[in-house]
Image 1 (cartoon, rainbow, N blue to C red):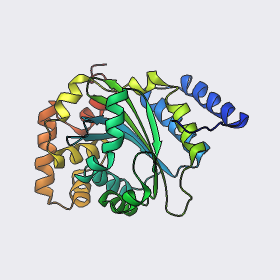
Image 2 (cartoon, rainbow, N blue to C red; image 1 turned 45 degrees about the horizontal axis):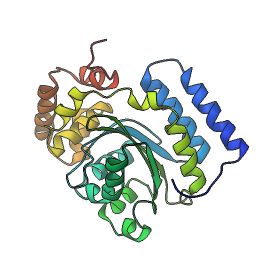
Image 3 (cartoon, helix red, strand yellow; image 1 turned 30 degrees about the vertical axis):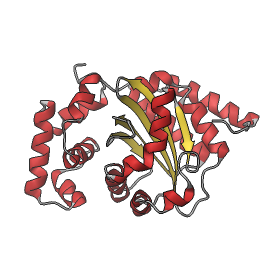
Length: 260
């Protein structure tokens, strides 16, 4: 973050208060993440957000994304976000960000224009998919949390709102880089290995299962038959050695393999 920019005292107090409140929020790391993101979205006027994991951020290879928690989306718009993040063009979109992340190995937070030009962004297939999700502008925040695992956070604004600026980006970075312990909660090396074995459709199915979608809803969102949806669900369960959707959700949301 090279731009010379200073937050005012009110913003700084808001950041400190939010981080402090997050520390004492009751519940597990998922509850704390939700509280943090809800508060941050309020401060920077973000319409929606998602927090998940990115596996394989080498800009030369396809990346794998798994969203575990989100807010501000309808079922339809979140399904569109899921499709956007699993689109083959997303790797090219993220490539400049991924390259810097791999070189510096530190927490990075950027707005559009800091890692891709606005013209390139608006001419990309990913932009068209995000418009279907009622998203116009994005702040991306990534942090390495393990070998090949990155915490990835997206904050979004709808087309009716102004783009994010340096103030919003600085606040987001100050808040999200200020909770390294929370970024590191919830991921495991076991998950990294397993997720990479799934096909793109199976990963999308897994993502929707974790969000609580039924098999019929998954078939509808992915525009596939219920038989195909059942096959994808079966494959996901086999890979993770679970027998039900609640067991799958617990395995990921607890963040330690589901053994507590």
